[in-house]
Image (cartoon, rainbow, N blue to C red):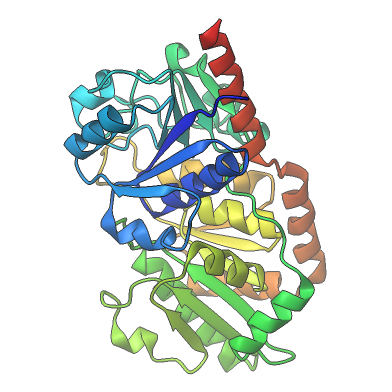
Length: 373
């Protein structure tokens, strides 16, 4: 009988937890033993309904060390190689290294000194699986007129695998049921919006830009409803007071994708997981991105640079925090009503769609086989 391997998945923030969950469910379906560690308590709700794996809270490095030493996983997967900023953890494992150590990242930020000086990537990974299609990854590199330089020592260990998660498209019947649940009437357009906030930076500026833009369109007679998912305590109550705005403090991972898939347009921050789900569902998407100043004064455009490859090939539209409401509202209208623009973006999304879970699993199996030899 084939020996089962034990996998430990470790999720950083809300996006990484969703990515890790998708991969963990896939691995569990293959008959492997799966453990799941969440670094932040606020993200436990993303996996609270999952029965395929045991869940642990590892808020501190010592919690993770204890878990690894007790469970002795064969495969250790970090969802974000910058999950702990401590210098010691980045340089070497604080426990006996499992057979295979993998990092799954959704960015190009491996040049620590240049891009993320306060959050170092772990250099002891066997492979870095980039949660992006190869075409997108290549466009982001400096050598291909992108913005990112990756050291050769790390680049040789990087493998683009496509998107995790890519969920199965939901049925037309399910879409109609969801739209009915949220009282989306015939002739109304439905926008899904999410700007993080679960112990990760809450992009309230993007929420405000969306509300003001939809305000201007509704004043012109357009029929639009917006569903916003996320915290509301740090948003100006006046911005929340709209009869066309549906508010949900939190959703399970499945609900999140199902409602997102039932919309006509997705309006989000720079989050790669939401963007990959938008592309999976084949829904037009607008990313509202801001300039980062907190990590490095020398690199203020990290989030622009991350989203730019997607914008270049037309799978999303990107705006800055300071973009005019007129421009944003025009693009919202365009992607809600202009059939040619809608179909162009949908076609571009279809062309880059690559399912990452099977590719990542095969890479891990190959590495395990080589280890046994």
